[in-house]
Length: 127
Ligand code: C5P
Image 1 (cartoon, rainbow, N blue to C red):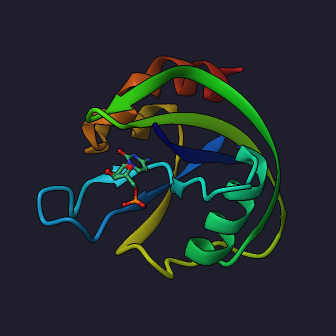
Image 2 (image 1 turned 30 degrees about the horizontal axis):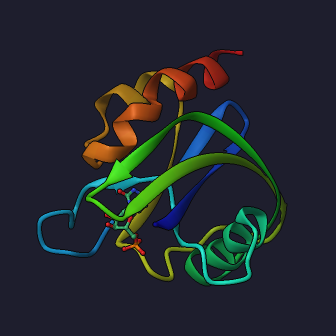
């Protein structure tokens, strides 16, 4: 079973979403940035690596929230709240980035899998 980590970075009452460029069926839709855990990595290490590669930022921590999401038969994905340590996010691997508040979150065309985290994200943006 492979594991995918997705990171939620919060700032000023907003969460950072990223717009996918691939595959074609997901291009244009929004997600929490992340990717697969490589052998020997912890979730926190994988998040730090993926967000460094994709956004050019340094993050720390991995506070899991919401339900795990099954992706096909051999991938499971979990969401984590991470702390932004340094850097300003840039879309190095995405079409665009957007900081959204609770209201804007409702309007975003999220990839199906990430919709499982909407209730938890709403709570965190409200609180
Ligand atoms: O980004 P990447 O293609 O490496 O992600 C691996 C898998 O996890 C893909 O199937 C992708 O659709 C899925 N994914 C997702 N939601 C995310 C991040 C990845 O559904 N926030």
